[in-house]
Length: 235
Image 1: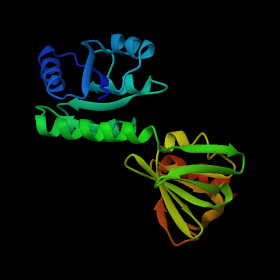
Image 2: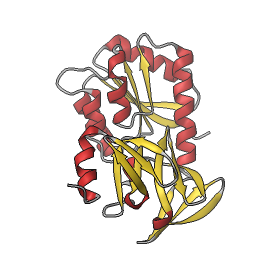
Image 3: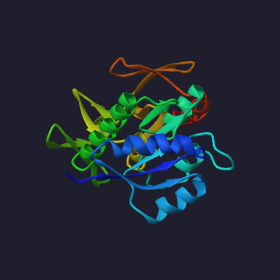
Image 4: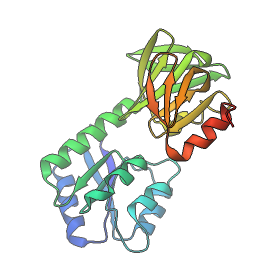
């Protein structure tokens, strides 16, 4: 069995010891290094291939969130912290999971099993851009051709993307952040953390609510509303 390489980042030695002991109990995990300073962890991540990072969030000088944001091609990140209020910020950085101290082993195991499944799927499920007007996505073992002008919207659902087109929908592994490099202006616009829209799919607007031509209603992030209106030619 190929092991998943992981590192631990926490400024508290006892907290690091606990996570290291959990890792040693799971056959498919391999501890590569453990760091008390996030800056040193960042250097290690820039020079080595790591599958999973277990990181505290609130640390002196350099937070776990800043560590995640500094990575251009981040591994799976599982945040471990005593502060529940950091959960939303953690997920917005693309974190795979969020564990609250004191961490139970069963909850830790659930998180790493989820990470393992994600990394396995990542090798076989993706989005491929063939040219400027179409993409192929891997869905249910098949390569599906989708014309960009057929896409109504793309919705993030955990580790997956739901592509909704005229007459159907498809699921594939991926992130909206990655899809923003494929689905760009002037045709597409990310209106909030979970949706990228084809601007031609907008039927009506009411404040920060959008109705699409298929009847779907979604909200617009406050910091995106003005730009959306301008893109639609509404002054």
